[in-house]
Image (cartoon, rainbow, N blue to C red; front, side, top):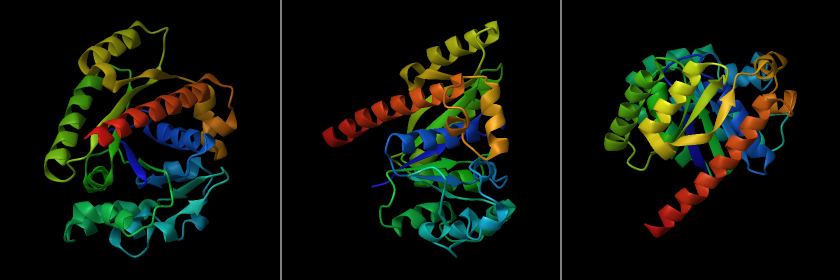
Length: 263
């Protein structure tokens, strides 16, 4: 079965799309078949993988409203084993249309149920909000990966997000779990960064990934070239951090699988 992981944070500018793109690329690089789902109307994940607007004939909008299947909406990328379900600004209207649908929270889950297993992983880049698009992602997902910027208000927003995940778990998707929190935009020269890391690790313990993602100019440049940082500059510290994060994610996946089998 396809393992579905949503990359979620209701706050923008925390490295969510960068994390989704580079995690998907890293998993493909180690031999996994990966689908990256762009569920943000801004379409940044699609642009970051070099998908032109003219290529986005079927999108995540079409899948959510039921006019296209996952297979019809997915496109191969320049990266072996990595496909993408792109997004356009049309997706911003999906929230309004979904309100009128029966079982509106399950539209994305339905699309996966109708699709034979093609991918090992689906990574969902969610919009920076907790509306119906994100709820659809969480309802369809096995786990949640939370990028957390090392800044003063980080814990406040994180608390709200964790409550939302618990609500989804209680009412829509009992099997969803927190895969982990990854600290992004990490600057070791900044004392506040160290304090935020200490607070988050104290609050969440082992739910926080050991790997941290540093601030890095090369990662910021990569999207303008339509490439993941891992392709744009494999040797930069940001790319190396995402490779490390992918290895850590796979380790956690093995532990989760063992727990499921034991249950």
